[in-house]
Length: 434
Ligand SMILES: *[C@@H]1O[C@H](CO)[C@@H](O)[C@H](O)[C@H]1NC(C)=O
Ligand SMILES: *[C@@H]1O[C@H](CO)[C@@H](O)[C@H](O)[C@H]1NC(C)=O
Ligand SMILES: *[C@@H]1O[C@H](CO)[C@@H](O)[C@H](O)[C@H]1NC(C)=O
Ligand SMILES: *[C@@H]1O[C@H](CO)[C@@H](O)[C@H](O)[C@H]1NC(C)=O
Ligand SMILES: *[C@@H]1O[C@H](CO)[C@@H](O)[C@H](O)[C@H]1NC(C)=O
Ligand SMILES: *[C@@H]1O[C@H](CO)[C@@H](O)[C@H](O)[C@H]1NC(C)=O
Figure 1 (cartoon, rainbow, N blue to C red):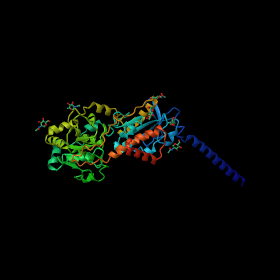
Figure 2: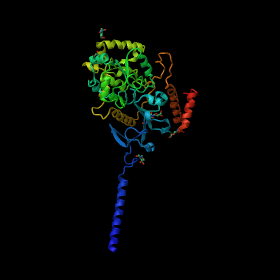
Figure 3: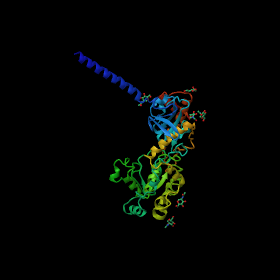
Figure 4: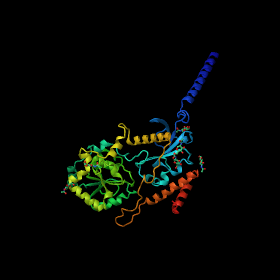
């Protein structure tokens, strides 16, 4: 009986001992985000909107920084920068009061339509670092939607001109393709295209200005198929593709331009006024801005539809050995390392490392309104005098107040009182104070 008790007690002691040992191991080995994983002089960079690297120390050239998405690092004594993803940035959720010595960085490749405050300098100048479509950003994202040089030259999705001609003559295809389902835009693209459609045939397959159905195999969930080979082959069968951005900003260029270039359908482009700076050759696309009216553009296109020699001048990157003759484009594409997981990932990591290096070097550079330049909707496409007001104008104007009021709050070290900010902002807007 006593033996038995002894054994039991020994067992108890052993279990107890093991428990204590386990506890000690746990205390020592569980990474404590605050202290153990961040070394003493390592700057902490916090993604305020969940994005980018999380809980990782990274080496950027000769520098090292710790990246996190954990908001409790807001009070970390090594905190040096807070980064934001533009589309998810909400004014009521900003980390203010803003601590001195903590820089803000903005990453936003998308259309300003997703957050209109950035079209105003009042908001732009809050950020010490930037990665946007503007070429003047620390890390420009102008080419973020362009997979690479090879894709521009590749003929995988290419349809020769004689086959395109046959499709127009024998299969009742229009020479122009329009495929868009987001119809309410800052750029008023549908107003222009509906006018153009009076003078030249366009096959419009998306929700906007729809006049034709996609083939069955592409119709279901076509948005998901936007990047499929099938859709690329389909686009490649058209002589021209209407490539109109949803907003007009310098260097804001999306897959709308690149996809037709890749498949060998000539883009008819409206969007970035600086787009020719990024074309394989200055005549690889037709700029809407070069024509007085949709009617004039249609007349020009009719000439190209009839004349294969003239048409093929726009396809040099597919048809001649010259390939890509634009040095700016080549230089920027060749900067990318050969092996990258995704183009976006590459730019994101580059931005993180730039911020890290700039913190170490105590450098920063803000974007100005001139460098992030977007055109306010101005009704220029109201061809019939019907004066359709663009529904975005009000938001555009009100967002100027956001930046202005935000700056005031920051200067006064005020934090947000949720609704209070919005009420004040709208009051300023109504009283024309922005
Ligand atoms: C965030 O950091 C705090 C303090 O360092 C830590 O207690 C918490 O567990 C972390 N949260 C997450 C989700 O990692
Ligand atoms: C705002 O707060 C910071 C510390 O967070 C302080 O250094 C600064 O002087 C304050 N500014 C004003 C105007 O109160
Ligand atoms: C970063 O921007 C803020 C807000 O405009 C400014 O107060 C601060 O001086 C800037 N930091 C540097 C290093 O220029
Ligand atoms: C077709 O275009 C080429 C090149 O622009 C031009 O030299 C030629 O005269 C045109 N042919 C006709 C029939 O217009
Ligand atoms: C475009 O291509 C043509 C023909 O290859 C060439 O003569 C011209 O210089 C190119 N333009 C530019 C800007 O590279
Ligand atoms: C960083 O630069 C700013 C001005 O650009 C200067 O005021 C500040 O003293 C510098 N900080 C360090 C640590 O060098």
